[in-house]
Image 1 (cartoon, rainbow, N blue to C red):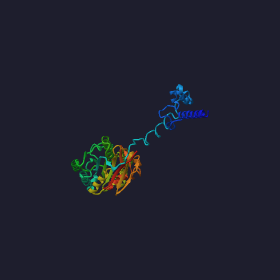
Image 2: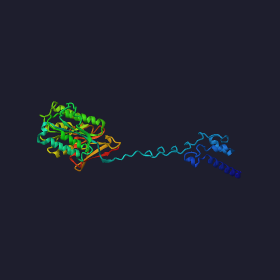
Image 3: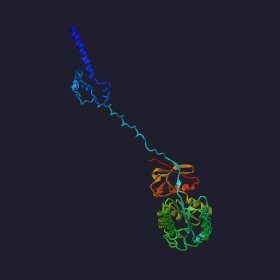
Image 4: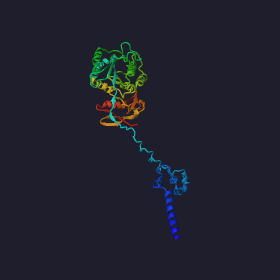
Length: 385
């Protein structure tokens, strides 16, 4: 009896071990479910045998091939915790390919092509002190100078013997030009030699003529610096010639031409500087320039046409560019103003730049500083959006 009990004990122990083995989860199941994705621990019971039936009794009748309670799938859905994908959506941080790189660039600012329309006073007082021949010599020197090469040049006189009007008729069309220097220089010299003095000083017609000529020119060549240069010995007493001499009227003409057209004034001996200075301010230049010699007149003309308007680097807008003015070897960044009226001193004489017709224009104060320094430079730096 004892031997039989011992044998039964061994059999029962073996049976328990077998059942426990069948019921125990595998290593893979401990780690997150069956590697086969859906087999249960009792699924083998369906293969039959009384042992399988006993083993499968926990999950239903194994002998009948039934699925164990719980839906036949191990806890965790048969997939490793986390859904099988690395944390963070399976893509490397930063989007993988990266964004577009923007690198700021710096260089010399590109000046616009230039056009200059010069008006020479031919009133009776220009015969005094040899002023008309002196101015004529200066214009000839300008027209043949290396600094003026490439400028589209026009020359007219005031007043006109015929065809001139206070509204600018006659004055808006050059007597010579427009033509590129120095190619036009010979025609300019011929015209100056043939012109005499003795007429009146018609400022209203001259100012309207300069404004109208600039407007017409820029309509076909918008990306151009257009400068009007008036060489005169006018005073408040000699201005008029049948047209208005009121400073308010004359200043209005000049101020409405600016900033598309800049008007400059070169005062010859016996002129009224206080009278002319107001015109310079209204026309967008800092002040009248006095000249008592032919060389001084030429220098003043070259100063007046100093490149002070620039294009933006390709693909850039005003918001993406900064400009630096280097005069006297000391560069400084120019403030970007929303319009010409924002130039300090409104619009004179402070530093800075503003946009006009899609180009960068130096404020009169900065332009004047650049003109006074033969080695002055304007540089640009692009910024990134």
